[in-house]
Length: 163
Image (cartoon, rainbow, N blue to C red; front, side, top):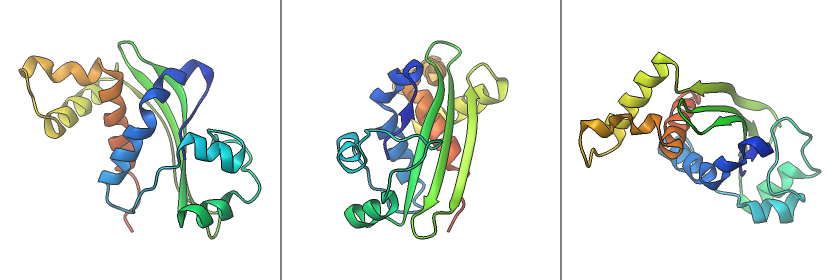
């Protein structure tokens, strides 16, 4: 499902859905299918659904029928600070569509001002990205909201249970 953001975090919507889908796909735990906001609007009357709100009637059945899905990932961006130090708060829930039970949930705020986050983000950037310019560009993951979101998505999806 498309990520949900409140109005103060809406700037992240320009790229968060695609980045989260890419990083979730890289986990290779299950096949991912994107539900575009326009499809969500048609099926459920809203482009984006928050994990904290009541789900529309026949939500599970509609996802199963239209996409052949076994589960759905609901993602909320509950805080977003795009300027240094970048900080993003995310809440996500993976729900089994047959049983309606949570298979996984997380609620984290990743703060680019935290020393352990700085170290992990730089290591992620070094391992996952080609350094086209020089080692001086390594810190760009801490300055680019897009790269920081990739790091965030990779970090939270690493906590998904393996089959």
